[in-house]
Amino acid sequence: MAPTSPAAVIVMAAGKGTRMRSATPKVLHEIGGRSLLCHAVGAAQGLDPEHLVVVVRHEREAVVAHLTAHAPRAVAVDQDEIPGTGRAVACALAALPEELAGPVVVTSGDVPLLDTATLEALVAQHTGRGDAVTLLTTVLADPTGYGRVLREPDGAVRAVVEQRDATPEQRQITEINAGVYVFDATHLRQALATLGSDNDQGEVYLTDVVERAHSAGLSTSALVVTDHWLVEGCNDRAQLACLGAELNRRTLAAWMERGVGVVDPSSVWVDVTAELAQDVVLEQGVLVRGRTRIGQGARVGAYAILTDVDIPAGAVVAPFDRLDDDVPVAGRRRG
Figure 1 (cartoon, one colour):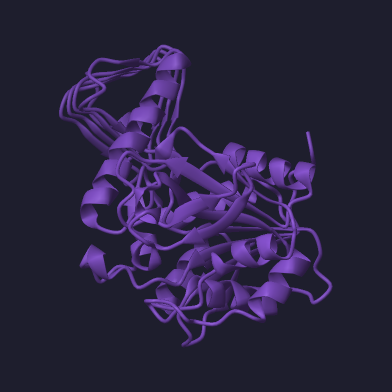
Figure 2: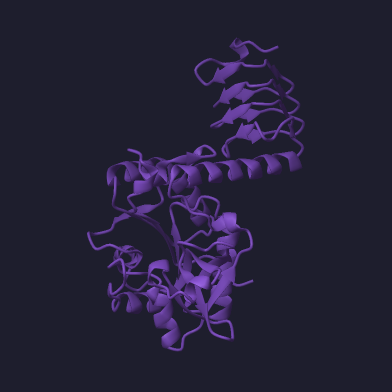
């Protein structure tokens, strides 16, 4: 296995998130007890990069304050007024050492189910093949709205074309770009310096770096993930709800594999920050929030809500109880 510690990870979090219809920045909306941004940064931190940069712009103060509180290792870098993903990455690179060399991972702050293991596999493929660019992709039955991946007959990635710029034939392609990449730092700097905005949206596309690499005869490839949830982005409230439900389903499945009983997984919600011991039983409608810890053999009654509390081993929490960190659990009602 090739090394998977990149020189840098750049998380793009500068978007406005207009379709969320919210005063809260899109990347600060939460699922599973964490913001979308914290999910993304957590996956990036798992790679143990030398540098971790988050590109910000809209609602900058709120996003930076959130990073300071939850991911102090990350360095916030401002995107200027020039739009586009290519420009966002160029701004991030400008804040990194000029001598930076090696793999640079670029990911997004609104793809919360993407995990460290998938990023490790992407970096391993990149370094193992000696790629200039390695993309993360998936295949969708309905690829509408996504950039299409153009391949050569030998499988090499030739380019990525955005939906608005694609021909009718290209729109029939079902392999889509997930917006997650590993670039060779040297190629990335050189390519970004030459990119323009001659496209339908008038933006500097990061995807143009792929075509530059292929045209220069450099190695390009894609890692195709079959689990499309790993690369599902969040643009509106409906997608946020779907991602939250899928994350909760996976969280409960993982706890059940470790010996936790869940009476009705369709109605129980557990934050990713909670800790459950073996033989805990969660009855229907239970909500487990924040840093709650539940000891071995404890039973949580139907529709109880636990927030940032420690439940002792063997305890029984009464149905409909509400426990939080304001009052010690020992002083609250337990059946």
